Length: 452
Image 1 (tube, helix red, strand yellow):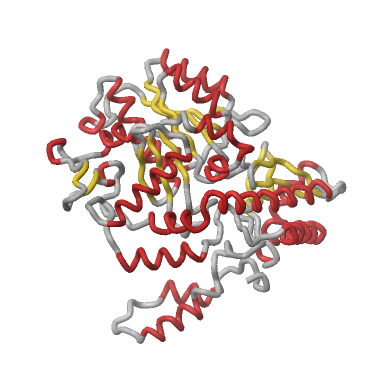
Image 2 (cartoon, one colour):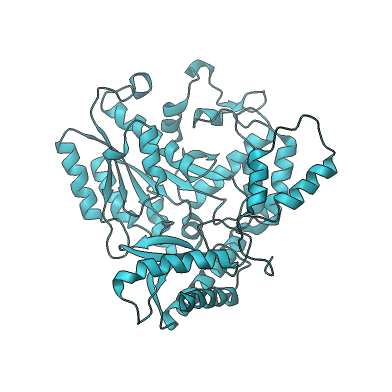
């Protein structure tokens, strides 16, 4: 793979073949189907397996995770519940992560498709609790005609939170975007003021979204201070640790953040990000599993299965803690990778990624025509800034550089905006990437900058 282009768009004739091809009326031999895959699919990947792919948060999957996905598909259970192995594997995976996060007895959770589903699940439980405290049966009556429900997130918070607000009937207009400080962290003083203003106006604060590693800049909010505000005002705290969670859970340097994370009411964490599991594998954890069950379960209490260890029913069903009924065996790949790598193995891989990101940031600092704009966890945001260019020209220049770089095949970065400036964004989540790859990426950027 290192000898191939990092990324190349699918050729137009192949795209047109997909768009115009009619449904097959008769079947083809397996060899023919595999040949078609080899000719039209495999040569045009997303690029995230390449050691110079630093776009977004998409690691290559660990080979054992790929094999586990095959085994899970062969078993093909529905993990809604019941007394079969897949259920007990998922319960163990959830317990392992709850213990790593420092959550108390009575906590729980379930695997979902990713961070978006995890945040939606956490917010739904938060909405149920906030409505119940206000005397509203939100499951029966919905949100029509009642007080205005409000959510809070920082300016660096993930866009999936706004989508969740819309899906839950709260609305994006009722999501307060709290400005960030100079370190791209939510300003806790402004959060406190916003909650107090909404309470005075008769609104119902539902939840605060804190971030333990934003995908934009890698920023980690002051979760301890945010947890204090939420505790003082009785507001649910949901922490988005989809990307940064593994570093927070495993690294000694982030022990203080880990301690604060343990105060959350719900947590998003994606093993398919920085734990190198194949997509999809998201996770939502709840401090109070009983409260989450009240938000989702459609099973009358007298019919609930809680501990039928010797019968068909098994333990409490996962389908009572979220909105999926048919659920794939997501837990097997996470379980197998944890057993194979262990905490120590994962810690080593994450520390490697951070070292490569450090080298990337150092190369930016050493280049006279580059400017570092943000650095958090394994994210490095920077831009080209030749002395010959005026400030007002830099956004256009860097957009041109990014497009040329992505099409060059030499490296792949994504684009973002940092403090109003367009930036080139690198995120290192590939243990096979090296310091030499990081230096090659910077060399490729500078070459495009010179050409532009």
